[in-house]
Amino acid sequence: MNTLIDDKQEAVKQWTEDPCGKIGAKGIEEGTLEFYDRVNQNRYEEYAPWMKKVMDFTQFKGKKILEIGFGMGTDLFQFATNGAEVFGIDLSPKHLEISQKRFELYGVKANLQLADAEKMPFDNDSFDAVYSFGVIHHTPNMQKTIEETYRVLKPGGKAIISVYNRNSAHYYFVLMAKYILFLRFLRESYRRTLSRIEYRENSDACPLVILSSRKEYLKRFSNFREVSIECHHLHAHDFGPFKKIIPTSWIRKLEYKLGWYLVAKCIK
Image 1: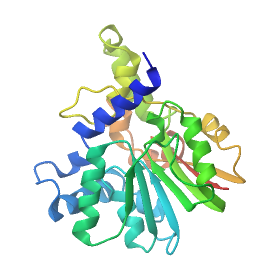
Image 2 (image 1 turned 120 degrees about the vertical axis):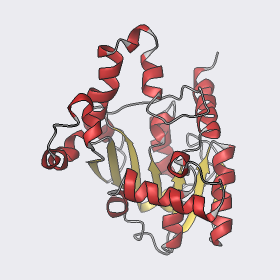
Image 3 (image 1 turned 60 degrees about the vertical axis):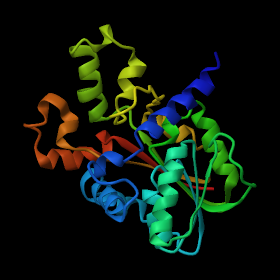
Image 4 (image 1 turned 90 degrees about the horizontal axis):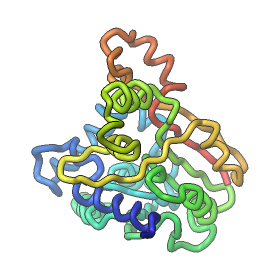
């Protein structure tokens, strides 16, 4: 059995049967303007209101940007409508279908294709920027994906890549609390527990999930000239049984250490 291929097949299965972010528009007909507008609202106003400021979708106007794992095209659409020339790769045919429909409906141009981030179909020095949010921690060879990111970036180009933070409140108080205190380890593997991070309504897939510490993640970008690692995304429910007593002021202060996402911003 080829484990690397199986990991990728599980990822395709997961996001073909339950497209990333679709839960945000539950009950609305897929592929309609109302559907995409609701997905946007859920992502930027409810799930991650910090994203627009941190990612700054306006910064690549007139530039070529590639998104690794474009999902339903939500973030890539933001870059495109702010003047960037956008390209995207994804493993899921369903993601490609939904994203193409989004751009067609709004009359916005995008260059989308099915491709593997560990072996990108682009020449060296092709892009001014490479972006990825919550994707490469599902790839069997995360380091290879980062090396490919470096290869396709132009000198001076910028990468913005986000992954899950192992040293996060969500990991300790939610995932591990359920795995250990609720005796889930008696019923399922650690991998299966981690895979439950990803929303599923129709799928029984078990996608690979790789968690990183800030220090581990920083080391992966050693080829880049400049690297900074930020930490974002923390809510009361990430503290599990303590969610009702944790002060809001604490959440704001702790977000930059215990947030769920590590965001790498790198210059080649």
